[in-house]
Amino acid sequence: MNFLSTLPNPLLVGAGLLCFSLSLGAQTFHPWIVKSRKDGIQVYYRQTGEVHELKLTTSMRASLPGIVLLFDDVARYTEWVYRSVEARCIKRISETEMYYYVRLDFPWPISDRDLIMHTQLKQDPNARTLTWTSTAVPDLLPEKEGIIRIRRAHSKWVIAPTQSGELSVEYYLHSHPGGSLPDWLVNAAVEVGPRETIKSVRRLLLEPRYRNVRLAHILE
Image 1 (spheres, rainbow, N blue to C red):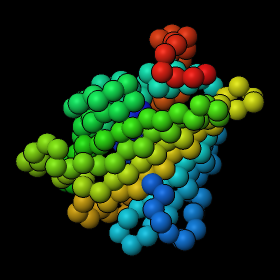
Image 2: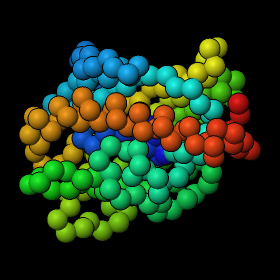
Image 3: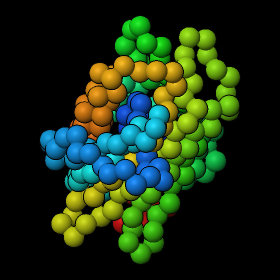
């Protein structure tokens, strides 16, 4: 969080913070493929060479400060970032910038992955749109034995208020997960990961701490 994968983020990863093996808007002209439309969540996928790309669009009823507070709480990423089992903030630069670590649980016999992300949050003062951008910084911490470090990852959450009172959510992710992954695992990440991440975010945002919060650095 995100920071939504970020979100917030940070999100990673995240969907993510981060769907664990996929992607954000790389420079390519390959068309997006619709993978699923379910629970009000549209998931799109494409592959350019060895890089997997993911785009997600949805809407949710929540406040901008509530989203920011959730994405800012890295310790809770394990509750909503798909397959994440460890998450911590490494260094906070400001209310809108931080470095965080996430470890992702891959099914045996595939090695777990981890990644370190640098996340920045910006808000358009006119449209009130929030944008979390996260980029991998793989050498900030030593690698752990038995865990593959994801060295190429970039994600972006774009969350904007609408006239209906809901928030419009877009999430992009591109990454190379390191090593090779079987097709069934990539398909699960594309098909299941984004939907489960968003459903978890929606559930957590119902908590009172996220419903009535106000943050000095976030315009509503």
